[in-house]
Image 1 (cartoon, rainbow, N blue to C red):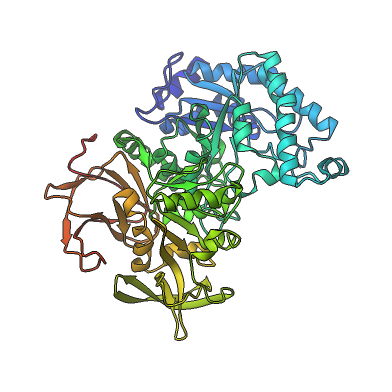
Image 2 (image 1 turned 180 degrees about the vertical axis):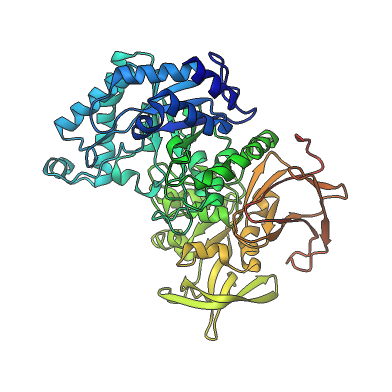
Amino acid sequence: MMMLLGSVALSGQAKPGEPSPGWPHLKYALYFTSAEIEKLLTDSASMRETMEYLGPVRAAKVYLECTSMGDVNVPQMKELAARFRALGLRVSGAMVPTVPGGPICYNNPDHLALLERRSRAVAQVFDEVILDDWLFTTCTCEKCVAGRGKSTWADYRTKLLLEKSKEYIIDPAREVHPGIRMIIKYPNWYEGHRENGYDVLNETHQFDAMAAGIETRTRATHDQHIPIYSGYVFQKWWSGVDPAKWVGSWLDNYTMQGQEDDYVAQVWQAVLAQAPEIILWSGGHLHHTGPFSDVYPHFREMLPEFDRVAGMLNGSPRGVPMYLPYGSEGEYNIFGYLGMAGIPIDPVGRFPAESRNAIFTRHSLRDPDLADKMLARLRAGHDVFMSWELFGKLHETEFRNMLNLIEPGGSVSSSQFRTRTGWNDTVTKSDRPFVFPRIATTTWPYAREVAVVREDNDFGVLLSVKYLNGTLYVLNMPENSYDLLRLPAPALNMIRRAFSGELGMHLTGPGGVGMYLFGTGQYVLYNMNDETVTVSLRFDGKVGESPWRELLHDRMLAVTGHQGQERSDGAAYDDVSLTLRPFEIAIVQSPGMRGAR
């Protein structure tokens, strides 16, 4: 055992009995599944080799998963936990609430008895236990169908899961170990949370802590098709229920062979969201014997840069408020696509009444008073930016009178886009056609700031009308949501410009570049494209002659002044421009803001 401890200490872990040195600004945890424990950790030689290989991560903690196939071997788990504690690592337990064959039926007495036994067993070993995201249920047995009655599956399952998780997981664990901390980990598939039993608002209050699942994996080929930026939104959104309960963010490399950039992109979302802990699922998948471990070498190389950036972030994060009530469903991951289009998103669970502008989608309809509240925003001189899908749901409200539409319905395809600034029109031709829901409007009031152009008409992409004392913007998403990122830069620039009043600036250039704002003068840009791009931070008015700096690579940035011919009000504006390589991150800092070097 002393040989094991000494060898692991040399690979970047602590000396025997001392805390792990970790990183200055980030905390990592390694999760080991029960199968990986049997394969990689049960004997001294395997454990030594495993921890040497993963030593560069400098994990401060491990999560040890108890079996998901039967009863927990308590003596074995106690011995293993003690061995890790001797290495100076914090140790927590993990529990997968499943039965052989899949999710639990919360009306099956045998399933519930097994769940309770596991909960009591892990409480004998650990002070803290995380639940893997198999807490959900999809059962449609006779008892579940009868129990649902006239309720929806979403209403029935969320109530059922809230009751049973307390009765068979939380309470039994606390009976064995009154001081135990039980963590609920939410899966990344938000649009299906309530349908399968997750109630983010009430479960977060019921459990002692929560972790956010940000497994966006591969953008195009994984069956969930989650845009990278959604990982950032998940963390900010779910932790907003109770920020004090957010313990960390969970990501993985499942099915990510050869996708090292996409894997690292997940980590960047955790770094930029300032996650308290980054949980790596799993140690065995990153280990060289794992089936998807080819992402590990690049991740290992990036570790110093992750920590350096985390230490440079200066000020509170900010963005455009997006109203996403807890338990809502809407356009699939639209928040992730908007973020990857260069609009910084601040997801909020309460109605944003005071901001200059705010984003509303079909998710927002979970608020039964939504239309009245948005109308009050306009009356108070605040803007409303909504999706076309949401607008279509408001036909029984005052909003039906805000746009003059001509027979909406169907689809339209074109490769030409018209953008309008004041009386100036610009037509841009893309390299391929895009398909949009068909929106035709009357000539006056002229509403089409961005439109797709055909011989027969211009069809709205971004509509804008003054109403009462504010402005209503309506965004028509392309039928393929990912196409939002591929729109010609002039079209995207007009969409982003709708938020200049809220942010004091907007991004210009191609899509696929995320922008994360901190404090009043720090702008983090992340190129999530496979090619090099040039983008600009466009500021209303002049930003002065003092030099702007990109901190991470220590570059001076050029400021280009414009007299405002491209603006309807003729006002001057300045661009701060830079070029980003594929998957490169940059930190731009204004001259007036002091920041870390």
